[in-house]
View 1 (cartoon, rainbow, N blue to C red):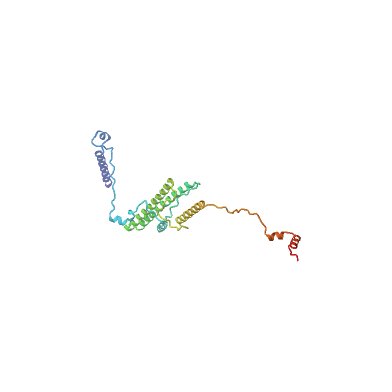
View 2 (spheres, helix red, strand yellow):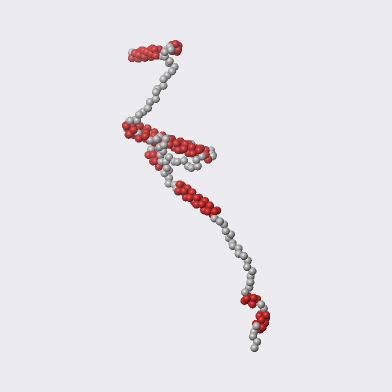
Length: 260
């Protein structure tokens, strides 16, 4: 009895559906003959904007940040990753290149590898949020939801900002700019030396070297040795006397002696 009533009710519903379909959906022939209605042009839904009011603005402070210029420092990124557990069932390491590449291609591959690694890290808060939802029986507080959404926005903004930085580097290289492109965020690692200071010292040394070279070129040159006119050698009287034989000297002294 109950089964019979159910079958009759089911047939009534099917009959009603067929009748409604005949009323609302005319045949193709009727649609072609009807010039007042164009059933083949379907209007698209108009786009709409979400105006941020105070409550979501307070819950999502990351909305006010520039999505493409909000990179994370290395220390902040490591702290962010350390605060969220890894999913043991997922491999976060992108596949490595196993063929030898040239310098430019190797740098491009390293850039894309880094982007893939950062994208894989975005899945960590997703997995952890699902774990918390299951543990709490599906009840998620507004505070946890706010932390989750802000975490996703921060990680995605970091990836987008990294792509912005790589685009800047490619633009500098394509334009032939000799200097290094500006970094959006300073590295957390302390450098061995200040590159800017080293360049300034080197530039000052080159300037001093050029100035010294110019002064030396303008200075008049002198011969290292001075020449003097030659003077004929004239021996003195004593030298002449010493040069004479001793016998001649005695004869000369005898002649010059006074006679008594």
